[in-house]
Structures are given as C-alpha cells and as structure tokens.
Image 1 (tube, rainbow, N blue to C red):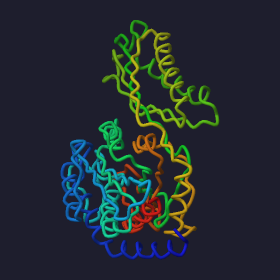
Image 2 (spheres, rainbow, N blue to C red):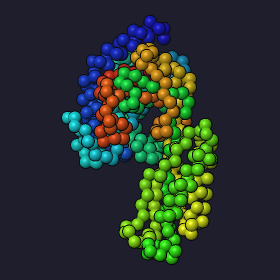
Image 3 (spheres, rainbow, N blue to C red):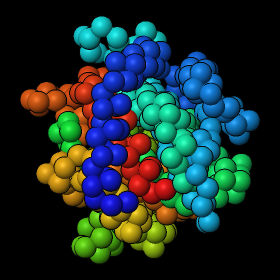
Image 4 (cartoon, rainbow, N blue to C red):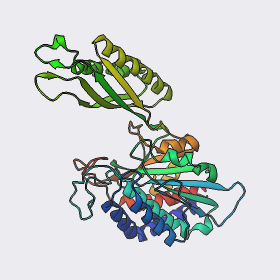
Length: 402
C-alpha cells in the first residue's frame, strides 16, 4: 500500500467511523446496562448475532455455548489468501457498579469494569465498515467475539481446542484493550513478552486447635501461615533472577473465629505472575517445597494447589512493527507510544501461541485523571470517544494486514 493511498484510505475510514460513532455508543451502552459473567453471556451473544445478521453476515455454528464467530469473505482473490482474526471479549466482572452516569449496570453484582463492552461495540462497528468494504478485501476477516476472558481457564483455549484456527488457518490475530492510563486518542504497543503468565495459589494449613492460653498444647496453623507467607517472598527476591519480572502475592487468609481459640485450619489464596515459562516452572517447584517444609518444621501440615492460568502474552515482533506502522498512519506518530510489559494477564495469549499477532493498549483516559477510574474498579469509566478511535483503527489495521 503506497503512502498516499494509505492516507486516502485512512481518511475514508476515519470519516466512516465518525458517522457510525453514535451507533457504536448505543451498542456499548446497551451491553453495559446488561453485563453477563463468564459463559453466561446469552443476551450479549444474541445481540451480536442479530447485529451481524443485519449486516448480511451468517455467524458460524457455535463452538461454545456463548460467543460468536463470523467470517467476512473478501471480494478480491489473490494467491496465498490471508485470513486476519479480530477478537473482542464479551464477559463482565462480578462487582457492583458505583458510577453515576445514565447507563449503569442494571444487573446486581455484575459490571463491565474491564472495557469488554467497549471491545465488543468497537468490533461490531468495525464489522459494519468492513462489510461495506468487502469488495476491496484481498483476503478474509474472521470476527471472534469470545466469552469468558475474565475467568480461568478462559474462553480462548476452548475455542482453539474446538478447532477454530484449524478450520480458518489465520495469518495474523489482532486485539486491543481499553487502558485508562493511556490518554484518549493514543495507543501503546509492546514487542515480545507483554503480559504475564498468571497462576492461582491455594493453601490449606492443618494444625491442632486448642486454647489460646496454652499454645504449647496446640499446633498453631495461624503462626505457620504467617511463616509461610514470609518464606514465600524469598522466591521472588532470591530464586527469580533480578532481571526477570516476578510477582507473588497472598491476597486472602482465613482462620479462626474467636480471641481465645487457636483454630484447627487456615486457608490462603494468592497469585503468582511471571514473564518466563522456565522461571514459572522453577517457582512452581520451589513454592511447593517451601510451603511443605515450613509447615513441617512448625508441626503442621500444608496442602498446596497451583492452578495454572494464562500463559505469557507474547506479541510477535514483526507483526507488532507492522501494526505500529499502521497505527501511526491512522493516528499520527505522536499518538503511538511504547508500552512497558505488564504483570496483568490475558487469555489472548493462547491465540498468540497458535498464530503470530499483537495486542495493544487503546487509550481511554479522561482529559483529567479521576481517582478510581482503573480497570476492575466499580468506578471504571472509560472515555467513550475512544470507541470511534478503536473502531476505525481495527478496520485500518486489518486492511493493512490483508
């Protein structure tokens, strides 16, 4: 694509994205009012299917109980046809919304606090524009509206296990995510390892309960739990190399119910995040040994469960370079910035293990920073103007990869 042709194409897409912006806002607000948790996204699935059908698309037979997959077939054929995947996640989080705008969640204990309503609306808007332009497409576009990103094991791996990529054989897979710390109108990209592998940790410490006035006659699981928490910190400070990012946090501890009773059992939960699969495996082994041996030394027993979560999200360097160039052409060089790696996790990582691709941050930051406007917060409130930016950017980037 020549630079002048790229400029003209970008202008066309920007204009169309502006025209359909009110429609995309309406879609987003509808989805936001009716959030649904992982694998419960039946209303959202129906909305997506109806909208795509209205565009003249025929959604594929469902691979999972919720979610939608649809193919836009290009009208221009060439040798070595490419297939570009555009993915949006559709599930919400289990928390009560505390915003004051006019389209707050109507569902008790459920909220789109991670921007998936934005992601879904933008991909629907992009589908509308791409269908209008399908005669110009030198390849096909696969739209994936994926359920259950927020709850391990997620929806990406089950889709892949069901044969999604085996059937469509994509060339590139792309997605974007709302980030309130990136200003509206900008995007941030990162080559290589971008997001962490995330594992869930569950510990049960079993001792011997007794009277708090006679701790020598008991086997105190609370004391052991405290020592276990302290000992686990050496995994990051003394086992993980200083140049390798690693995080281990115990975020929940429960045991006991009275001031004068040593309980029989304490339970703990936490998370471990790593950017390297070899280090991940090493920390798993050392964590098991540490917990077991500390408990034994203090006269109690400990059970350890490590639930393996999403892998490291690795952005293909070549694809990311191409996406960076496309973003600069569409947004201007000053609006494309480099992101540092993050210790958050995303099941988009599974797609990137199966196909080259990239995942970028879409700026949704308000003009002035607002306390509490963070991901997974009950007051998360992204700048809606980002819907226009993200819709057009998906279209333009997809066309560049075709």
